Amino acid sequence: MRIKKGFELRDVCGEHIIVAYGIENIDFNKVISLNESATYLWKNVVDKDFDVETMASLLQQEYEVDAETAKRDAQALLDEWTKVGLTE
Image (cartoon, rainbow, N blue to C red; front, side, top):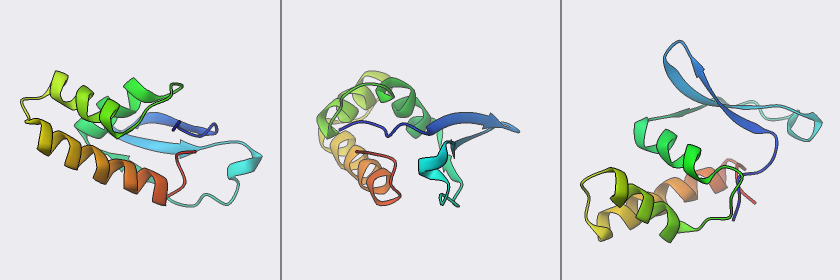
């Protein structure tokens, strides 16, 4: 899985948001705000192939979280990114 081209992380007034650009994303009308851990994951998977295990491992490297919780949180975030069309 990869983050689709045409989306980028920006800091707007201290808030991390995903913005769309390019003609293929012209109908994208949502603003996606990321918390600290989601921002950390985005920065570490953008332009790379990744899966839920990759994301869970990254969470465990950065935060004090057990494997089960990391995987559950990673899956929930990945499901949300997929639902709103950020992944391919």
